Image (cartoon, rainbow, N blue to C red; front, top):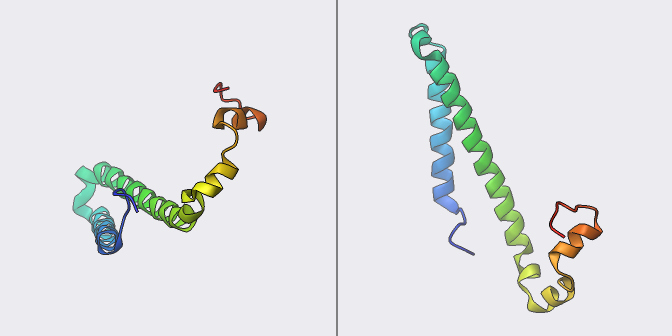
Length: 100
């Protein structure tokens, strides 16, 4: 697998840190002393949620790639699948996108 993959303990550590910071942020938001920085806390909580969502999607994508890599990594299958250039496939499927 390539260098951009997320693996084991690094992912778990990132998820734990995200969870920990989310809980701390929510606790700070509920404090009566948070009024001066409440908007900053809301924005921080949104950023943490976005990061968590991206990480989750990345992991799903990685799992799918690991599952499909043997199929698309095989030269014989690539010869069978890739008989047409991608641009013509896009235009045939009505996905013009201005690429053809």
